[in-house]
Amino acid sequence: MSEAVRDFFDGLAEGGGRMLRQVCGTVRFDLGYPDRVDHWLVSIDQGRITVSRGDMTDADTVIYTDAQFFLRMAHGEVKPLPAWLRNDFTADGEFRFVVMLERLFAPPPDAHHPREVAARQHPRAPAEHRRPSRDEAAPPAGDGEPL
Image (cartoon, rainbow, N blue to C red; front, top):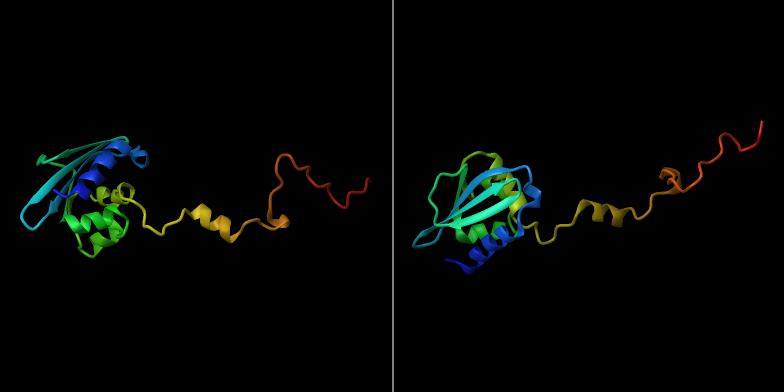
């Protein structure tokens, strides 16, 4: 068994799935090695994740790939959905769990949160495009002269 694969699944169980609060189901990963196939069962119950190894029970979705490619997905080097579309791995069962893999795996190494990118590109909106804050007084109507 690969130490890196075990570390990934250990971290998954310890870290929980805050991005998976509305997900319930099971995904079995069948990871191929030259001489064997390792089975990992990931159970998700509203964000609580448990992982077991060697469990051949039925799962909502079964994902089969080689261990090296799995680690590339787990490290964010390869996005799961495009990889599935390219047939880099196979999935049998409920498609929603293939889409959900994006939440289980790390983001790409050079990824940035959209809000951070927007803040760097537009540090301050021009005053005429900003809404006044609650603390700022609203400008007087018209030209400010009393009638």
